[in-house]
Amino acid sequence: MADSPDFEPLTRKVTSFPDAQPINSTRMAVLFSVMLVTASGNTAMQSILPTIGTQLHIPDFWVSAAFSWSALLWVYTAPKWARQSDHRGRKALMRLGMIGFTTSFALAGLALFLGLLGWYSALWTFVLFALFRSLYGGLGSAAPPAVQAYVAARTARADRTKALSLISSSFGLGTIVGPAIAPLLIIPFLGLSSPMFAFAGIGILVMVALALKLPNDNPGYQARGVVTSEPYSSAPSSNSLKDEDDNSDGDDEATLPPQLRWGDERIKPWLVTGILGGNAHALILGVVGFLVLDRLGLRGDPEMGIQMTGIVLMSGAAATLLAQWGLIPLLQMGPRSSILWGMVLGATGCLLIGFSHDLHGIIIGFAVASLGFGLFRPGFTAGASLAVKRSEQNGVAGIVASVNGMAFIVSPAIGVLLYTYAGPLPFWLATSICVFLFGWGFKTLKLDERLDSDR
Image 1 (tube, rainbow, N blue to C red):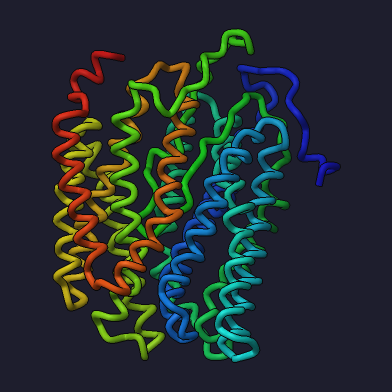
Image 2: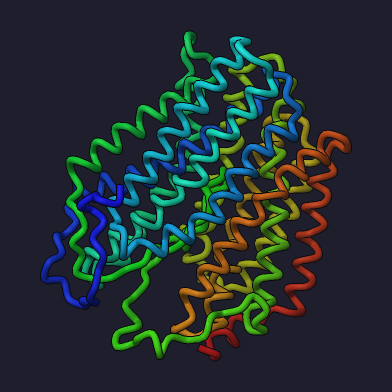
């Protein structure tokens, strides 16, 4: 791989676009597909794995732990890949990400297929699944920042925001598409593992399109990809992919700002907010698939279980996108108001889920909760960003991405463990966190007007 022609280090900084080839509609479609497939494949897996775990008689906790392991690898590796976007080639990193995605889904699907046939024990089935799943967390995380950097490096400033918004929408759209099409991809011969093989095949098609339709790196503008969190059924923040203006013209190593620290007093309240709210969100995401199977009595009906789980997850992703693409810009909500209203809706939704025993109630509760967390995440992201100087935006973006990802390492598995032994306790806990965060944020977080004046 080191000899690939895509790995051309940039030895100079160019601020014009003399060599850049504009991104035409075909190339943009390829980039859109990379993001869409990366997100939709992961959320499709979320909708089928609880049912597969039931078929294999695997405790729900270990099913959730497989996602925790992938999230840990994603948090660790994503910043490393993002830092290499200028040096190893954006197309090469996209290819690496799609290789990790495709290989992970093909091998994990094979492990589950053979396990469901009884070739080896349920324990070994999930050991192998978690091992192959790690390829997605470790290598798949290379693709999103590479796509963002590729677009930023080849798009004039006047068009860059629009192009990056389109790329961001593909990542969010994938969180809806995945659960929606997963039940349609099940075929009798391959059984419940069918969607994973289907997405592996789609990944191969995307890699072919990358090779044939996307030119090699020869950018006329340096741009580092923004680190994104692993996509979950609630959809990532629409701010996770954004335009990084060339705001460092003339800067060199000697003039770079000091590294931003987690304990910086300017961002500490926003980080506390992000950690608490993120863990409340992760608690319910880890449990909701199992709750659907139990409350609707679908443990013995695999196909219906996947279908109903997909509907619930899809409603949550749609509500999140409604919050981020509709309510926040329409109502012009600032960071503090987004967080406070988000916590009100989050607490209400979690409470509704805990009391619901039919599909209608679960869908409404999960949608309301997701709407709230959809308001909360951009609010926390924007608040942390506005608290620091322009020259510190890269530093705060990395910290925010880490906070978003860290919540999904442990909390989903803890939520499932609590659910196994104490029923709706995870939803009561999530509700309590939201209520506490509302009160704490009301007293602690800066008013939106003050944040604007600080800038």
